[in-house]
Length: 349
Image: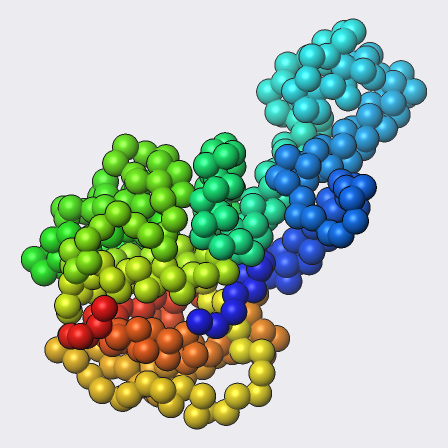
């Protein structure tokens, strides 16, 4: 399947500035925590967070020292310690309501730290295999909640949430779809919101009913579900294996619903309009159409796309076709993500 940019979700959330922030944060963290052993090693989340905390603490200490020099009644040690919620020494700094100049600075620092933590974890999940990501989350389960808290904050301003689009689609299909596999379910909102039986899978069992596993190996029998859902869940270097697993567990004529950020399909080359010739221009009983016209590059996409604002979905859709999936519909109207509905063809494994 097409390669994935490590910072694609970050770029979708914040454009080039977010992508640059990911690169800068990774460079700084590596310089701070580089091991003595020869050869590069991947930085742990704890080390990256410690590096950011050290930098912010130094800035806070300098600010506190300046305040003390100006005759502020707040003890410099207390001011510096309060930046990270530590036990302050000396006079109290007053109510920590978050109001006023001091509270505003503290809130901004916390927001920047949380944003940096999310971008770091996002990069980790995109550049690891599904098995490695599962092992990482199982060994440090707190990272899962940190990632999803950051994700929710970063996407709060989106005009529409892809998980809500998936819920609306499943509700509309309740007479045809009875059993669903939700790959990368997060807090299992889909299972709590639709009438179908939903099997929820993610790297951590963060809610009742969620099964923790590698998305490439879910505990379902072959041909056992009517629909599979990926709502911004195709992360990892081997995300193609997640799609193969979805095809395996789908019944013949089963549905596959995918939502992905548009920046993952940013056009980087000079492909001509024939790049999507792998798709047929055929229609189906649902009225949706596959083919060149619907799969052609979509201009005007935002959220970290290429400089000319064009995307090419053709290579990705071509891979899905080779997995035995037929494109029924494509919705690229949302500026942040695109939605595809596909169906498993007879004879696909």
